[in-house]
Amino acid sequence: MSNEISDCTWTGSDALMLAYHNLEWGVPLHDDRLFFEFLVLDAFQAGLSWKIVLHKRENFRCTFDNFDAQKIALYDEDKIQSLMQNATIVRNQLKIRATVANAKAFLNVQSEFGTFDRYIWQFTAGKTLINHPTCNAEIACKSVESDAMSKDLVKRGFKFVGSTICYAFMQAVGMVNDHLVTCSKRN
Image 1 (cartoon, one colour):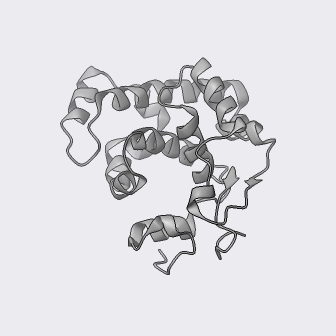
Image 2 (tube, one colour):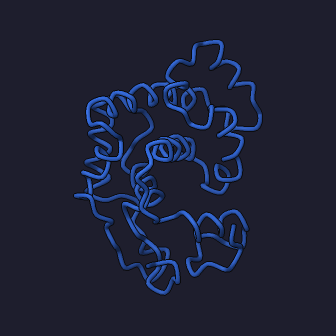
């Protein structure tokens, strides 16, 4: 992973944040497993910083069966309680239970649309929305599209998918490009 300095200042000097910015953030995804991973991670981010969650990402991958929605949908009460004892992840019972519910809802969306990719990109008409922020203060925390996504996800049984979380998800998976206009990773 690249540790070069990012032109977007929200990364700070943290090497993992820099690598995430330089290699992932804002890059359009079309991989259902990665979509589910970001849904889970963004839900766990609620009320916390992305830096905390990012630094626990590998632990989340190990703990949550590499974000395999089919496996997670089968988690029972014993598994949920064992996750609550795992200090290497964020131990929030509501978020852990939401992950199981979201795995089930995710599989339902895949069944209905063929892929989650086909479903999720409809909120931006299959295109990356490109914004032109000149500073961090100009980066939105939600949009009309994230509002619509949130509403539809909730209707489908997803949890921890408010508009702000949906917008962070859209940034993570490249549905929105919010790199600063001066950022070398913008294009």
